[in-house]
Image (cartoon, rainbow, N blue to C red; front, side):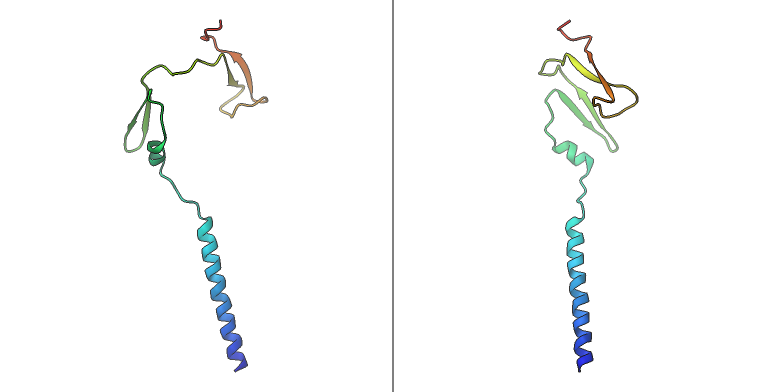
Length: 99
């Protein structure tokens, strides 16, 4: 009788651990979002026209931005990188009205 109680307790512990593990892994599983759905849901400036196809999205400006151009902008030293103080220089925009 004692062996039966121990066996049933072991089975119960394993079953409960399985349920807890399944619930924890389900909570940590990231939810995927389709790129096209995210692009369609974004709030785009009315001066940008979006055209969707099966495999791409074409973004075309339809007007002039409603803000002034920046007088300075970052230019990478080498390749495509996220600009920071070690990877880019600050240079003057040659089309800036401040010239």
